[in-house]
Length: 248
Image (cartoon, rainbow, N blue to C red; front, side):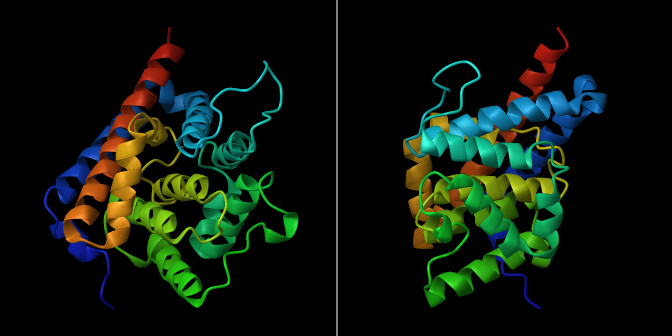
């Protein structure tokens, strides 16, 4: 059976960018602080990632008061998602591997719990194109492609942004799926990287690149893949900074 993602590796710079992301994340996992105490880095990564993901979608970044529940529904959802993925040992990784649509529904239920009515949580829009595309994307991302993990994560991320399958919380879900793919494939098994910070700092470029990916233009698809790989590489450096701080 033809691997639908294989041609993406022929786009200029993509293979090298994917390898650079892989090397950077491997280096973060080898840091002395992460050999035994990786849960500390993973916890901080989850928080930073959630806050950055919230900000990209116009949500809050900080809690209103120390220890308080977030009043902003986007931030609240992003934090729930981050907690569910924290450390990569979560049951969601196993669900993703065997039933990715169930994992996707769970992520949406967490992300959008304060945004829509309960009966809409985890339910994609009832459009045949959405259902068919979701099935294809999740199968590819959950193991049906042999493309490098950074490429698979980038495609899943971009496709979910383009589809907006739920109509609420889609950005937080798309970025969470990118994280989930990196965990499930072993690229970043403990979820130490924080790519969301890179995207947040370049929010306009991020949105533009995502729109380009949705257009299907080879140049635009390549640009999106390069940006996502750069975010994974930068997120690995963020993980190293967290680990370094933990050793002081």
